[in-house]
Length: 534
Image 1 (cartoon, rainbow, N blue to C red):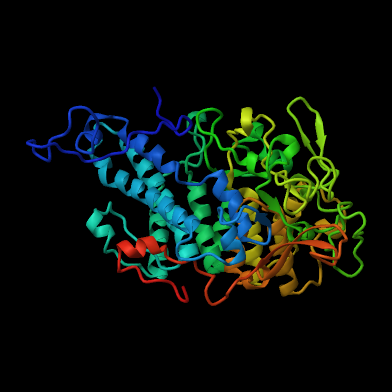
Image 2 (tube, rainbow, N blue to C red; image 1 turned 60 degrees about the vertical axis):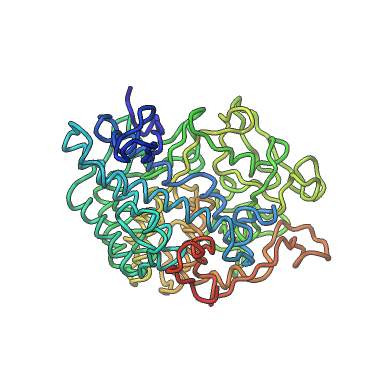
C-alpha cells in the first residue's frame, strides 16, 4: 500500500510507554512506540511526514481569518475569530490558543521526523533528502504563521521534553526570521525538493513552494529587493500560468491546475471540511456564520478601472453590482447572483431585507450582512455539505502581485512590469477596456502602491491573505475601527447612509498589532513574557 500525501494515512501518535517491573526502555508488546516505530517500519518517515502536512493549513482557518479583517464578519458571539475582528479578545481567547497549539503541534511533528529519520531502515538517500526538505519547509511555514501574529516566539528545532517546554523563553523575532530563512536557503540551494511531483504525490512541497514561502517572509518584512528577486525567478523559471477561469480556480474539478503552488490537502470522504455549512444561505442548507462585508464589496473597481468613489466613476448606487470587477460576482453572493448546482440548475439568491428565505433579517440562519460567500462553493458536495475541495494557500497570481507590490514600493513599476503582472491578472478576470488593463501613465508612486494593494485585495479576497496584509501595511488601526457594514436598506435607524451597521469594532494600535501570548501557556511557563499592553 502506498503511503502518499494523497492518501494522507495518519500514523499512530508516537508515545514512550513502560510497565511496572519492566525496564523503561523496553517496548510494550501491544502497540508501536518511539522505541520501535522508526527502526521496524520502512514507511515510518513518509507516514510521519504526511502527518506533518495535516497542520499546514485548513479551510476553516483560511476563511475565518477573513473575519479578523474588513472583508468579513462572523456572527456567533465569542466564536472563532469574532473577538479578534472587533478587538474584544483577551489573553484567554480560545482561538488564539488554538492557533498557538496547532502550529506548535505541527512544528513538534516536523522536529520529531527530523530527529528520527536516520533510524528508518533502508531509506533511499534521495527520498531521505527530500523528506528532510519537506519537513524543514513545513516547519518554517508554521513559524511564519506564528511570528507574524505573536512577534517573538519560542523557537526550537528539537522535540522538547515536558520540563523543557515549561521553561523555554521567547526568541526574538529577528532570530526566528534568520533561522527560517536559513532552513529555506538550505533546502532551495541544496536542491532538496523537485519542481513537481507525480499524481500520487500532488500537494507536496516543491522547490517553488519553498521559494514562495521565502518571498512571503520577506514581503511581511518589507524587504522589497528580495521579494522582487525571488518572485522574478519564480515568474521566469517556475513554469506557472494563470488558470483560464478565475471562478474555475476554486472548483474541485480544477485542483492542481497551472496556477496552484501550494494547497492544503482534502479528499472526498477520507478528509473533508464542512465550511459551506458555515457560509451558504439557508436555501442551500447553510446558516451563514461567516459573511462578506460591504467594505469588501465596495473595494471592487468598475469595468473602466475607476473605483466607486473616484471622480467620473460610472458607479450607480441604485444598481450597485452592474459594470463591476467580474471577480465580485465570483467571490460574493448578492441579490441576483446565483450558485450553479451539479445538474446545471442556477439557484438565484435574493439577499434584500425581508425577502424570501435568504433575505437580510428573515431568520437567524440568514446573513448578518446581506451577503453570502460564493468563492469555494463546491457543487459536488456530499450530504450535509461535506466537501473535499482544497483551499489554495499560495497561487501564481499571488506571486505576480508580490512582484508588482515590490516594484511599486521600489519606484520601479513601469509599463513593462505592469504588463507582466497586473495586466494579465485583470485580463483573466474579464476586464477588456484599456482604461482598466493598460498601465496608468502618469500615476504617482503612492497611487501605484494604492492600485496594487487594492488589486491584491480583490484578487485574493476570502483566501486568508487580508489579515497579514493589513498588519504589515500598518492600516489595521484605520480599517478595523468603527462600524463595519452590510447591504443598503435605506433605513434610518441602525444604518450609516442607509447601510446596515453590523459591528462596532476597535483596534488599539499600541496593542493589537500583536496577539497576546495565551495565558494558559504563561501559567505553565513563567519565562514566556507577555506582549506589550496585554
